[in-house]
Image (cartoon, rainbow, N blue to C red; front, side, top):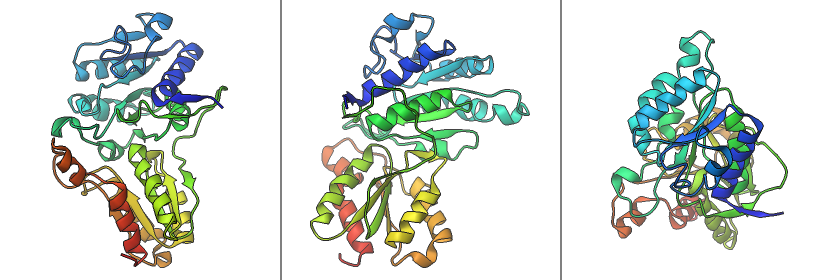
Length: 326
């Protein structure tokens, strides 16, 4: 099977859907003439022209609103934010227009659109450019929130997101665009809301999503050397969440650790913890563990970034704690 970069898988998904459906178009900062800030849309202006690959000013609220209006009028926009940190400027259109329009119109207006771009830490970008907002958007009725972790999932989920009749938040990472993975030649779609077991295990369930799940793979390999078998679940979407997959795994392993790049209060891990203790309490042999970000704006210094964010060592310690082997 061929190997593609994460950015190439995203580009291929958009190209295939734009060839399939002339109502699909891409709009955002630097997506056209510059071939994308992260070269995700490289070559798309040449193929589809300036009417379907549209550069915008640095005005997120404005072009997000244009996208909502286009979706109300039968088009299927893909709105790229250079980073989801900038989506805060547009959050009124995302939450008060895109997410609510179907309900407020009594079912008359679907909003078939995708808001996509990178989220979370990407190195020394400091506090205003290093935030993870998955839980913010997942808290909003009317939105779907997808966070892929590899090129295969990214392509299949983005194609499903573009075809979805509801607004989808599609969150990527600057640190993943160069990641390589196997992607089939033929067309395929992956359902939104279905988690994937990336590694089978028997002793403890580790749940994560997005780029941070790579720490789980490293930790699981190291823990296996110590006789601890981790089952690693990639949620792939955080609205809807595949609670059933998590509960099934916990009933097998009897222990759960959740790995997430997020502040502690009202995170995705908080919600999963509540759900598991509500539906699998009698199966738990230890309190649920969480490995999350420190409750601070992300610093600039590399040493402080390392201290603030999850890493494989912190995850290994948490797994050993629920195994009573710390």
